[in-house]
Image (cartoon, rainbow, N blue to C red):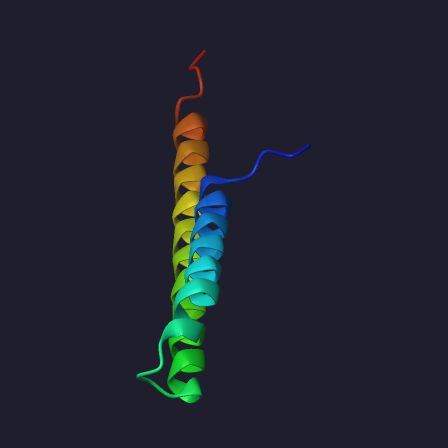
Length: 77
């Protein structure tokens, strides 16, 4: 089984959290309309997606930096 990247499991954790709070709290809130409820939940999903993309990009930059460091440390003969 492949190990999940940090960016993936953090995004999955936030996705589960947003979904659970949306399922539990939004139906109980009678002060806002249904459209506002869906927009709130959709906005939270967009934020989680942006977080995942940002963390994935950061991991790719770190991997590239490590590869460049390893290539620069070639032994001289």
